Length: 258
Length: 258
DNA sequence: TCATCTGAGTTAACGCCGTTAACGGTAAAC
DNA sequence: GTTTACCGTTAACGGCGTTAACTCAGATGA
Image (tube, rainbow over the protein chains, first blue to last red):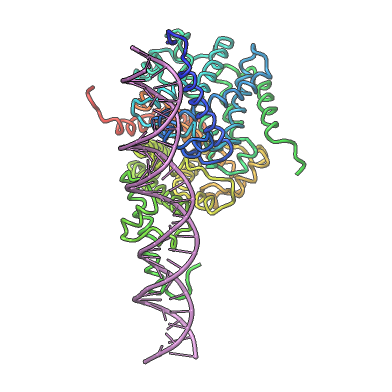
């Protein structure tokens, strides 16, 4: 809800400082500096306790930064996808997935912060922020567009586990779902399943719990994505999309002679 | 290489202290206490700097604990599998997978430490320790037994990406592979792929990056495991194994009326 | 046996960290 | 013009990993 009166000078100042905090914190992390309240404050020419006027504690700062990093990362996914026309959501999804992996490998610290940051089951603000995650919205939207176009099959509501049914009808995960008819909410189940697969490889690769050569080759990631073409009704497009994926992956491994 | 002479008194003392450090550290983590050199030392009636006679730094302690936790967790996987006969590796694998998930959900901190702990690409001792991970050995062995019995198909060496071929011929991941013939090393590829899928759901659930209701229902995990029965040549056994999985999952959700 | 040396432990200290409490000053509010 | 609310300060607490200098018992070697 927007403020009734235009923001006063104090309010604008406050918001500016708040934004600067998040921006500086994000910058620090990007520069490889360990994130800390003191570091953020000192770079802003302030002292650490002052930050408590803006964030409740350290964890809240981390969560804000995570949200911001996710937003920035999603921007890069969108840029990668923009190389393909908007009426080709399948190619866009492939490009976005590769971009997601690219980001996770290039910035493992950021990736861990955003996607491996443990979230307690507490019904906290942390969950709320997670539900807003930009990347989740972006990927669900791409999946939805693919469905509109290719009409892949998805489980009907009564095929779903009752608990899952509740979950897809009133989703608590980041998903652009309001415009999806209740009967079509089985789509979200497909989303969760495919996201889990993508998340698996990428986390494995990003955290390094994987043979480095397998990471370098990109084969594990490639196979995983290819396996999901069929369930998404893209079997007929497999050759074309494989090329899209390989093109994007080639970009990560510049043609070195040796 | 074993010592030529029997261990002297000093050596035995030293080893005992070393073991106590790892044990105490593991205990602390299990009790929910934040792991720190000072906490470990003080519980042992020592001061923190003394620990530097045994571990190079904090990270090394963490890695040792991670290794130990992995070993202990694998023990629970084996116990869960032991409910099924040794000549039924398929049921044992299903039970072990559910036990893996059970452990990850019950001890998210420990799980994160062992399986989401970032490992740099540095060719460090950390990698070496990872390569020895007990759980990896256990799961590859189960997969191998399933192959012996059901002879599911796997890629031949020349079907594999050349880089991946090197990786499966001389694996750097935790895997019991020495006894697998080079021609059959495509098995390890199947292992990596299936492990990546399992890892994905379980990490998603354990870290909480998932709708809590989906976790509670276990449906995402269940579907993922079921999808892997066919590639492992277990399609004919699907009904039986589904029951195994559901039985094991039911154990996690005790029959509450409401 | 006695001198020597090794090494496991100590204390003290440094520089970080998150966080709280008490206080000052400035800008908004009445 | 006075009061109030708020943004920032300094000081301090307890914790962390880590290093340096030292002590002292136990093994070692002549």
